[in-house]
Length: 310
Image (cartoon, rainbow, N blue to C red; front, side):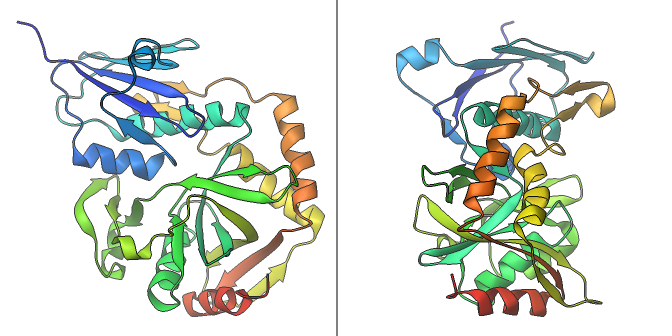
């Protein structure tokens, strides 16, 4: 008996094409699409693409059904042996993000763990690792202050020739803790559960209409009702705080098979690191960076108050 094979094609903003071969009847449905878009900013899912791209993808990931677990890869081919008969595991989506992060780094695009919100021509990044309250702040700005969302959790940025920071793509799918479901006024379509979180889509009215935006402010946000502080960071403090987010060490690797294996991609070169630092230094001429800690009301009102001052 010949098992069903599904081939899926993904493309990144740099025209990098990934071919996914799913054997054993594994399906890629709405749940999987939601999680992929939640993890990987700027990803496009294409069923049928030009023949020359189909025959020559930049990377192929081949899933082989197996009761044993094994992971192997070289520059342009990955083989995964595992049992996905129940569902495609979360590590797969994280793996695609890790791959995209390393690919984009080499091309001068940077995936930042952040939401991007704004109005008209004034846009800000809300930075912070998982759990600091980025999504909660973003939703409050959307619902109560008429901000628009350019990206929900990860944003792809680049330095323009005059060294201002520009966001070119991001994740559109929202991810929240299970306990925060009540904060969402409305969702569109299916939701997808993963770990102790869920992914969903907001109505179109909350999305930015632009396909790229200039970043004027960066906020390191943290919900903490016991303090109220908004501190403007000087250039050195800004570089020290921002630099790790451009490399995204926390999310750039993927733990596989509950810790039995690991994918970390190619080492980040010294040349790439120096390029980030030199570009950051110049971009800070037109970029204001803040550490913003406090209650939800304090954080949202501070961001709204600063709007229009850029």
